Image 1 (cartoon, rainbow, N blue to C red):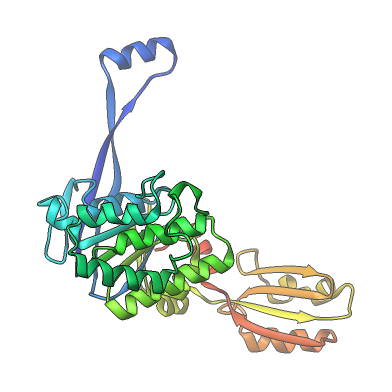
Image 2 (image 1 turned 30 degrees about the vertical axis):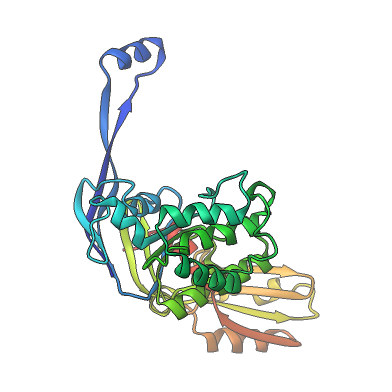
Amino acid sequence: MITVDKLRKEFKKTVKEPGLKGSVKSLFKPKSKKVIAVRDISFEVPKGEILGFIGPNGAGKSTVIKMLTGILTPTSGSCTINGKNPTQNRKNYVKEIGVVFGQRTQLWWDLPLRETYGVLKEIYEVPDDSYKKRMAFLNEVLELDDFISSPVRTLSLGQRMRADIAASLLHSPKVLFLDEPTIGLDVVVKDNIRKAIEHINHHEKTTVILTTHDLADIEQLSKRIVMIDKGSKVFDGTISDLKSKYGQIREMYFETGSKNAVEVLGYAKHFNLGDDDLSVETEGNAVKVRFNSSAVPVSDMLSYTLGKINISDISVKDADIEEIIRKLYEQGVE
């Protein structure tokens, strides 16, 4: 469905020397330098997959999405979506994609939502029968009925996001690009948005590229992620692959009546662990120990802890994906 081959985007950035003299000089004889925003990225997305596309701020995610949607033209390389080049024959291409930017809206601010959808129906040339069926489906999945007659400017953030997703799906696109679809939403609304995306993907086999900083979105919706940093792809695989390769960090929780449990245990000294391999947090009687299980096996950590202090309850789990990716961002990926 989506093929990205050695995609590259370069920009020219004007370089100004300091001071008034530099400002005048840059006005008449500007100097520029080349900035590489995206470096020869390649990946494929089969039909019906939800791909998590992640990276830190400034990594190049938005630039890639803009090239895939046809807003930007690549400097080199290519991308095709359902056999079409995004920058060619734009009118036909945009009929096959839907785009939602979490901080922007495609809705008309002062129009009632129902009339906004009517305008989009004409723009996308959706037949009357198809429009009625589509709106019935979107009403069911996204629960639009409560506010479909309200002007867009009166909608809450959660309502507007649901309305924007519906607008992007009105013409039954084959590919949906979601950029931060749950940003700023409360927990309940986030969960409803995720369930709606899952439902649409499952029932319509819509291919989804999801860009988000909320890693709960990724864990719930995506089995596979592509991670980029400084314009380059640094990981492409399933979440289980990521955890298997980089997720040796475990979290051990226990409760104890000992007031100086951390001092008594002395994990760092006993196991000779540095800050990268160990962190300990306490809150009242609860203790959370985050440790690198490749440096200290879980069995050794458990037996040592249980042998040193009295514990009322204890559990060990894998670190979540947010913790793994945070470490990758800090340390880089080889």
